[in-house]
Structures are given as C-alpha cells and as structure tokens.
Image (cartoon, rainbow, N blue to C red):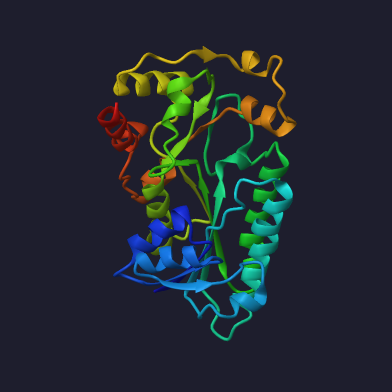
Length: 294
C-alpha cells in the first residue's frame, strides 16, 4: 500500500517509522527541517503547504491518505484553515485524480465530546463540543466523511485522547502543581501511530476512539508521578479554586470544567494491542530520566 501522510509531524513521523518496510510512505511537510525528519524515517518527503492545491500536485498518487496535520495550538481561525479548508483541499486534489485514494483517515480529538460530568463516552456517544476550536474539529470530521464520500473516498475518523511521549511528557507541570481536579484521558504517541496503522490495515470502522486503558484522576496521577520520581506530592486544587480570581479566557474555563472518561472497548474488541496500556508504562522512561538526573 502507498500511504500519504499529510502533516507528517509528531504522530505522522512515528506512523511513517511503523509503516516503513511493509508499505511505501510519502510524508508531506512545509519546511526543509520537516522534510529531513521524514527522510530519516525511511519515507519519501514532499515539501508542500496542505492548504495549497498547487503544492499538493507534487504529491504522487496514493492508495490511502492520513490527514494528521496540526494547527500549532493556535485559535479557532487557524484551526479552521488547517482542519476544514485544508482537509477540503486535500480531498479535492486527491479525489480529482485519475487514480484517487480509496481511503482517508482524519485524526481528530476526544475534545469533540465536550463535558460529560466525569461520565464515560465511546464511539456511540453524540459529540457536544463546547469551544469554537472543538466545533471546528467536529466540522472537519464531517468533511472527512461526507466530502470524501462525494469524491469516491471512504473517510474514517480516529479521535485521539491527550497525546504524550518523547518530548511531550510535561513532568514538571504535575510535579510542581498545583494540580486541578478532573480526569486525564491519555494516549502515548507510539500507540496513536499504531492505532492509525491498525485502522489502515485491519478495520474500516467509520469512527475509532483512540485512548489507553485507564482514564485517571489528575490528583491520583500527580501523586503516582511524584512517588515514582521520589519527590513530595504536589499541591492540589478544586476546579472552583482554579477558577476563583483567575484571569482566564472563556475557552480556558470551559476546558477546566470539561470532564469525561473515554472508553477504548471498541479497539479491544477489534483486536488492537497497546504498547503502552496505561500511563504507568508510558511514563516509565520519563520517570527513569528524571531520577537519573536528580
């Protein structure tokens, strides 16, 4: 299979590494450094802006497209340009070819579920986004399914929980505190890539929720992390304490108030096996590095 990874960044590079040897991979990034990183995985790099049809013309025909781009943590306007406008452009460019791809996978976010007061959500749960950015992500999901279908491409959505892994452990944030109450739904980078590969090779599920086995209370996670690192447990605070007197934007307040636990039961039923089933395995390298440096 020839796979095109559009926005071949944090997850995309790991996906390219995992696919190498079994599939032909083409990674797309704008920068020269990004192209070098793609080449280092063994994939072929193409420098292109995913929002520019003329740039995308340089990408060869592929059997499947993975849209794994990031808006760089910026606001809803930037997110819409990448996730909605960019995705539409990608679909139109590849879907208009003589040999269009059969499939497209769009990597979304569990943020589309909104607030469920700590309750469980899964693939059957109706998304209820609470911020402009998560509403953009849900609109991009519609584009991935409906706009792709209109071009003869089967669209799939993989909703990632909070990503962590090499370069993104954020240990100090939890060790220093204060830590606000709520649940963490997490996914190691290697499993994020592994689940996309699984979706490409083993299932045509229209939506998959990509999260590890154990959503964890933030206070419990912070205490576990402190104990493993051999330091004092950090101070804690309630959501009300975090919001009291804080100069926060409305989206930031909504993120603090949003709480849910994401289930990966469907992934288990389909047969995916996690490399890092919980944060305990996933954070072990970071804990060991911290203790070695202490």
